[in-house]
Image (cartoon, rainbow, N blue to C red; front, side, top):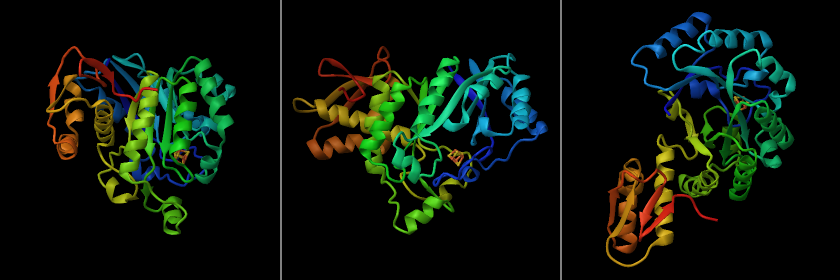
Length: 338
Ligand code: SF4
């Protein structure tokens, strides 16, 4: 089912801490909307042809439930006025783990909130401290459990490559997230943004940004963990509508199509794990995955030619679901098997 979010950004609103890597003003380049701007944006999004089967009004870029109650009330009331109009089915927002408790949930019950996204970022206590998140793992586990028990859709945001993070700690975070049984996750490899405390840490040699190559290998493992458990990864890599965003990325594994790079790497790795015989490498995938198999700019095709002197020949097979492939008489998943 096609789903769309109508996004409203509340940059840093409600944030109790300055996390070392964050600058929502660079990411969103948007300010808190006035009532008039809110309605204008809604009208803009609702103009026909509207093809989405379900729409949520989304408040991102801050810690929604940490905002003063009158501001929460204002935006929830504005949004609630549209819920039930056409395919608009509810409200979603992102927030911090330490801004969710039973009182907060009691307050939300008066509004048609459907989804709560929690910025977990890491399950490792040292990484949380080094990133100045200002909450701990207990906050994360409590908030996820409350959201689930109250019957909301739970989304989790995690980051890789934070200060103090490494391959094992990121994998541990992904496994902890699986145990929270979220409906979906977003994965954000850490970028060093201009003017953030993380930039200073990097300049002082206290933080080494991750390279794209190690990020691809790590996210192969992390995506595998989520896909194996049937948890949807709805985003991989920071997306910004700010046209000047890339100029503000000082270092880190930035690529505007990171998810497609990761999927290509996953197809390459799984195929290489299973490579048999000689001559052309023939496989079948869903038509939607053909470009991922060949890789960005044909990178995978070139890789198998250079390394094995074998041509990659991919056939579209309508019957195949995404994220799997047929090779050597077997249907194989895109994720790493245990
Ligand atoms: S990561 Fe979230 S909580 Fe931290 S500063 Fe950014 S918006 Fe605020």
